Amino acid sequence: MRTSLNLKKVSIALLVVGCIVVIIIAWLNSNRYLPFQGAETTSSGSLKAVEKRLAKLKQAGEKPTLEQLADAFQPLGLIDAHNHNASSSRYLSMLDVWEEYHIDKVVLFGDISEPSAIGTDAAAWKAYQSSPDQFLPFFSGFDLHDEGSLDVIRDNLEKGYFGLGEIAGASTYSPIVSLAYWKASDPMDGFLPEIYDLIATYKAPILLHIDPPNGLPILKLEQALEAHPNTTFIFAHMNAYNSPEEIDRLLGIYPNLYADFFAGFSVYNPDGGGHPEIFIPIMKKYPDRFILSSDSGYGIESEEQAIDAMYRILYLLDDPALAKKIAHDNMMAIIQAQPATMTQLSAIQELASKNGKAYNYDNLSKLEAGKILADAEKG
Ligand SMILES: [Zn+2]
Image (spheres, rainbow, N blue to C red):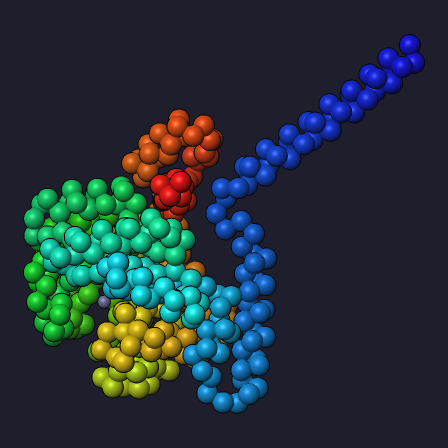
């Protein structure tokens, strides 16, 4: 009698413990897919680490080297938001440089608005498939004067590309972009208005090259920004041949506009005037609207010099919390806003039916879906 009572007690206790374990596992699983989980603690930890390292650098009182800057800002996870190395020989040759200087992620594409871009788009995709945590592929291989461009764009965004770029929205003076076969005459040319509406449904951005950054091209850009308020526009190398006042004006009027800051131009290109500090006040005024890029070192000594310049801008900010936004968070906010596509979801469903794994489809982002699929591809 007594033993059976004890047995009963033990089995009830076991049942309770079992229930608690099941509840804990379910709770952990439900949290696994929440974006930014634990971001608070990680971010304050990383900011403190950066503050400490910067204080040391300042104490030394000398101009810091690239190595010192890369080390100081490593916890922020710097993203290069505009990079042209999408060909297998080029991005493979850069892997060591990115690792050495702690470039956490690269927005990768190749040629600009011409048929050869179809090949470099494919190379960007290949890089992403091999390292989904390192690369964010964009594409540019479509003729914006042809209605068929809408199908190309839909297919690529469905597949998992994160944005359009670099797109020639207007070019008169750039020796390369002005010759681009599929360039637009202005940011409202061809099927661009339809393209803006289409990409808004995917929350995907367009990285637009516009030169000169004044006159008719800017009037047309302003028309586009106003007529397509749900589309995210990134003005490529917005600081090139442009003034802080004009950037201030445009960012002030259009909340759907982001500034890609090509640090190398303002820090090292003689045409940039050699006073990058004049842009710091507008970065402080619009902390969520700037992203940093190397533009693969266009017009300066090297891509390494362009990376050096990105870190010099972060150093000039003298504000680790703001540096974190401009180095990493602003770009990731644009990427993480994009939901998984129907094409990605059905591919994951097919994967699940093959490998028997359960995936949480609720609120899955394009980034998360892309990683699941790329990892499955690698096996
Ligand atoms: Zn570029």
